[in-house]
Image (cartoon, helix red, strand yellow):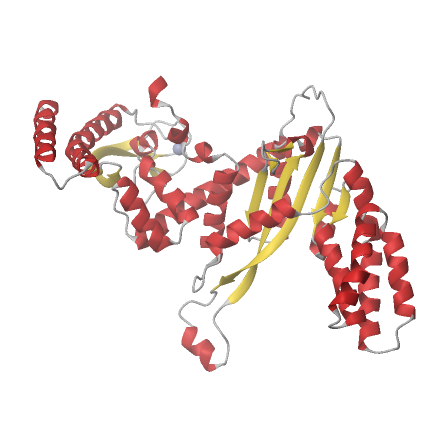
Length: 450
Ligand SMILES: [Zn+2]
C-alpha cells in the first residue's frame, strides 16, 4: 500500500535528518512535504476520478439530461500536490445547445485554464497582491505549485472575470432585494467617500513603432474610481487610540463613472444603506463626485474634504505672501482654525477683504479664482457641525485605499490593459470586502470541523 510505503519513506528521511549535522528542522520540513506529496496527489486523483464517474450526465446549467454522451475525455490540471489527469464524460445539452462536461462543474474545474480550485484561489490572491513575475515566484516558494508568469497572468484574469460576473450578479441582487426591515436599535449614518487615481495603460499593442513615428507615446492614463462605504457607528478606536473602521466596503473600478455608481450603490446597500437614517458623501472636490452624489444619493449631505479645502487657502496665501513663510503662517493658522471650528462664510469674508486690498494682476486673479471655488462649495464645508455630530470631515479612509491600491497597481514600467486590470481590481475588492469565499468556497471551509 502507498500509505505503508510512505511511512517507510518518512522514517528514512527522519534518519537522514538526524544524521546530518548540517540540516536544521527547515530541511526536514522540505523533505517531509516532498515525501507526502505523491500520496496526496494520488489520493486527490482517485477521489476526483470517482466523483467524476459518479456525476450524473445532466447539464450543470439547466439540469437537462445530456445526449450523445461519450466517456473518456481526458483533462490534465495542476493541483496543490502536482498534476493529475482525469477521464470525464461529455454530452450535448439540447436546451442550451452546448457540449457539457458535468464532472468539471462538480469538481470546480469549469472556469480555469488547467488549475484545481485550490490553485485557482492561490493564483488569484497572488496576482491581486503582487506583480505577476513576483507572484509566480512567491507562489511557488510558499505552496510548491509551479505556475509560470504567463499562465499565472491568464489564470488570474480568468478568475477576475469570474469575479466580475459574480459582482454584477450580487449588485443586481442588492438592488432588487426586498429586505426584511431589521430592527435598528440606534439610527446610524452611512458614510460614502469617493476618489480617483490614474493608471498607466497601453491601448495600442503592436502599434508602438508606428505610433512613435507619429510622435505619440503608446500609453494613456486612465482613471481608477475608488470608493469606500461604512456606517458611522462602525468607526472606533484601537486600544492605542488609533482610529479604525471595523466594517468597511470597497469599490475599485476603471470602467467609468456609471460602473462606479452601480458598484458603490450595491456595496452601500449590502452594508446597510437601506436602513441608514442619513447619508454623507465626502470627496476632494472633483466635479464628478458631486454629480454622482446628486444623481444617485440626492438626499445625501455632501462634504468637501477638509484638507482639500485647506489647500485652497494655501493657494490664496501663496498669492498674497509669495515666499514670506512667516507672514504666510501667521495669516493661514487662524483661518484654518476658523474653517474647522467656526464657519466657511467667515473665512471667505476675510479672503474677500484680502482681495480688495490687492492691485489688479495675476495674484488678484488667483485669489479671486480660489474665492469663487470656496464660495461654490460653501455648503459642503460645514466642518463645525460635522465635528459636533462626530462625523468625519476628511476623506482619509478613501485616500488610504487609493494609496494602497496604487502600491500594487502602479509600479514603474507596469502597463495595464482595460480588461486585465478590471479583472485584477475586482479580485482585490472581493478580498478587501471579505467576500473571497463567495468566489472560492473552499477557503471558508474548516477541515477541523468536517
Ligand atoms: Zn443545459
